[in-house]
Image (cartoon, rainbow, N blue to C red; front, top):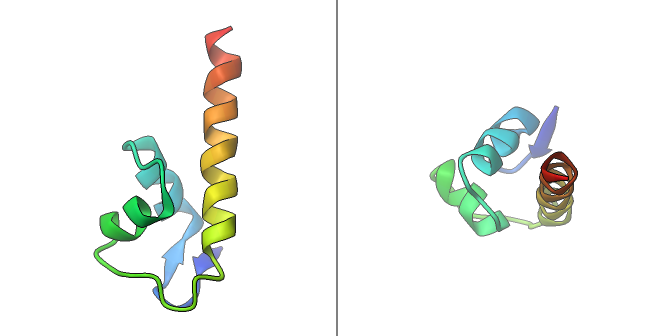
Amino acid sequence: MYVCNCNGIRERDVRQAIAAGASRPAEIFRSQACQPQCAKCVCEMRQMIDESREALRYAAE
């Protein structure tokens, strides 16, 4: 599924960037060698980052 239609960034690309240490949407765009266009995807990227942090927090307990 596409998260960013403008740049063709898929959900798996975002998850890989987060797993590699991306903690902000800008870092996800950088990992894909692109820049935000319309920025509609930024909220979804932030949500995915938050979900990842939450999962790590529960795993650490």
